[in-house]
Image (cartoon, rainbow, N blue to C red; front, side, top):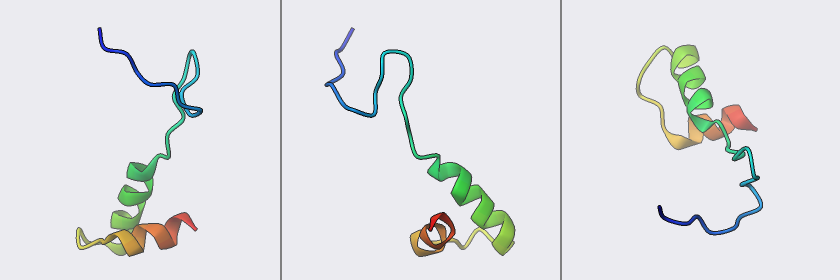
Length: 46
C-alpha cells in the first residue's frame, strides 16, 4: 500500500473535504443550466 503524507485535514478516522461538488450541483439546479463556471460556484459558497 502507498503511504499518504501527513496533513491536518486527514485524521485517523476521517478526511475533511470541502463538498464543492454539492455546491456545484446546487448551482446547476438553481441556474437551470449546465453552463456553470467556477465564479458561479464560488459566489454560492461565499
